[in-house]
Amino acid sequence: MLPCSFFFLTVAYILISNIIILKNKFKILFLISILLISSCRKDEDVNKVNTDDLELINVFKIAVEEPSGLCLDTVNNVLFTVSDNTNNVYKISKTGSLIQEYDIDADDLEGITIYNSELLLADERNKQILKYNIINDELVKYSIDYDNTNANNGFEGIAYNYTDDVIYVLNEKKPGELLTFNNNFDIINTVSLSFANDYSGIFYDSDNNLLWIVSDESESVNKCTLNGELLKSYSVDINKCEGIAIDNKAKLLYLVSDTDSEMYVYKLE
Image (cartoon, rainbow, N blue to C red; front, top):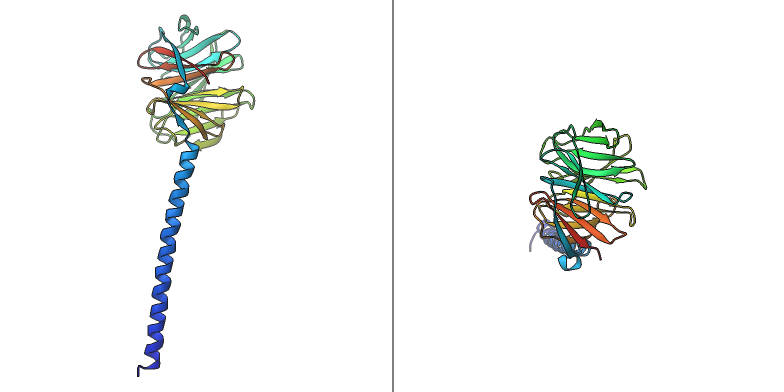
């Protein structure tokens, strides 16, 4: 007969072994469940459609070298863009004709937006937001202190939400971020973005209270909430797309190509 102590040790070993096996099975089942749920959520969140849903109706050549950034002046029915080649501001028609050029003291302009009666410009290399008055040619620079040491992966787009009186700035990548500023040009919120390879242009849609964000590397136009959450994504076949503007009244979407100096006009759904 086996000693009593050996019997109890054997029973204990069997029980512990079974418990460990059961725990491991539960762990595996739990991990599989998490992966399935994550996959389903990803499929639900990213509703990617192709360009058939965005009808291209025109392509215009524009007399601006390397246009980067775009905004719509609804009062005067014109567009503004910047060049990261000349670092000047350009007023253009909706058919791409050059109306006026403004010389700006900047190093690396990448974004532009209407800011009340002025313009806001994003200077990537200097980590600055520039406020420019086209009437009196007055320029004010605001240096932004934020954690980005790469001069080529910084500010890439800017938009003004006049409803909430906040400013949005895109950090291109490494990391891709949506920065929100108050009207004192202080950062009040930062959101990480992960739906594209980079983020090259932004526009605030006041009619629908949402953001449109373009990615040149992913070749996509993305409709997002004000917190940068992706609602819908459209593929676009455009080289270095770096500017976007929406005209809801005319139901048109405008995009500019940095490398081709062209403006693409799409019909909105």
